[in-house]
Amino acid sequence: MACMDGHLITIDGTAHDVSLGAVRTLHAEGGRFWLDATNLDQDEAHALLAGVFGFHPLAVEDAVHFGQRPKVDAYDDFALLVVFGATAVGALVEVHCFYTERFLVTVHRDPCPALDELATRLSQGRLPGAGPDHAMLLHRVVDTLVDGYFPVLEAIDDDIDELEDDILRRPTDEQLGALFDLKRSLIALRKVVTPQRDMFAGLLSGREVLPGMTPDAERYFRDLYDHLIRIGDLVDSYRDLVSGALDTHLSTVSNRLNAVMKQLTIIATVFLPLSFLTGFFGQNFGWMVRRLGSLPVFVGLGIGAQLATVVALMVLFRHRGWLSADGTVPASRTTPTGRQPVARERRWRDVRVPGRG
Picture (cartoon, rainbow, N blue to C red):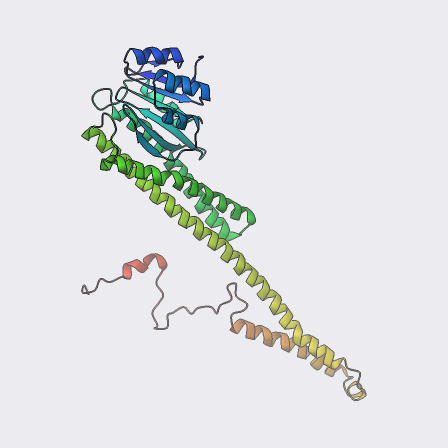
């Protein structure tokens, strides 16, 4: 088999060519190493995982057919962990970790820059957990994958803030599409973060046992579990923010529609009495035509009555607050009790604890 894509690092930090022959030699010599293989086809996966390492056929099948959920399966001499990470562009990466007391094999279909950076750092020194705490190598790999969620969530947080500001200024259909995209992304994150958190909870509770796990390594895995709890809380919080932004968008559009309808109604209401006046005086009755024919009558009744009607309507609309932007009556400068209103940023300072004066 030709060289594969990935990394092969031994215990002393030496990087080797990722080939089937090199892996077979290291495995036969009983060496300690980390093998990271990317984008293996079906034949390569069977030749490497089953032919060289002799992993169980069910575990090999999971590595060939991706799309698994986060889980841990314990076999006789190894454990299979399916974990997910996130890249800088927000894509999820599914990684299958074949873990034993002597070596670690990670298989993933999509490129993972975070694991590439980790391999570069580890090639400059010894592998972590080279001694009794061999589980530390697994921790470093999983911790690198989990840490990739935080930049993605920060970017989502910034996008939500920007969309909220834009929605309050001027809601558009493009914002609505962006909100739905964010909601789908958060749902996809939640589908992998929640079972991954439960998986490590099972490892810490003792339901599943990893080979070579020590009390010191368990502390690091507990910290990893805390990170997953925090990520899950952030995903749920951002889902609530996106739902609130969607409600804000729909409410803003509805309010703007109501404002337009209010303006059109005001215009129609203004012209209603004007149409009545012009229609009334436009009647061709002889008595009216003979008596309402002078210039003062034209100015007073023909023009003055219409202007007076418009002014009276504007005064009525303003008094009821229909001419304001939000359709409400302007608030007075003082509260009903006569106290001056308190600025919003200072209101919390006026809170008094009962019994402290």
